[in-house]
View 1 (cartoon, rainbow, N blue to C red):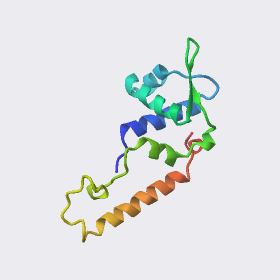
View 2 (tube, rainbow, N blue to C red; view 1 turned 90 degrees about the horizontal axis):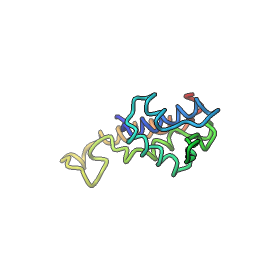
View 3 (tube, rainbow, N blue to C red; view 1 turned 120 degrees about the vertical axis):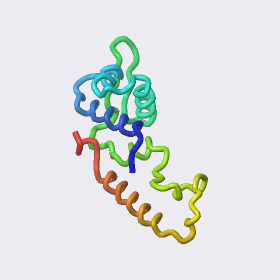
Length: 131
């Protein structure tokens, strides 16, 4: 299983802001630090701001910062927000499944259980745990 770059960039942004809570940061600064496209980061920051994870302050002296304390940002919530789906296998999606074994296959149940364990671990962790 692999998370999308979008999720990776979202978590990196939160980590950066968490380690610089004493001041405002800029998208350009984070982009340069992590070597991420500024255009991609603008989309990430917009979604994180829209969903209450960061505050965006416009203007000459503007910037971004965490909107919540790090111990209030649950990693599983960020991953659920940023991942379009958590389909480990094609058969997880009725729309895209073409597997002929769908009715008798037990492998999908193993992967489903693994995905649940993965998310359960993330439910127990907060941004503060990884700063």
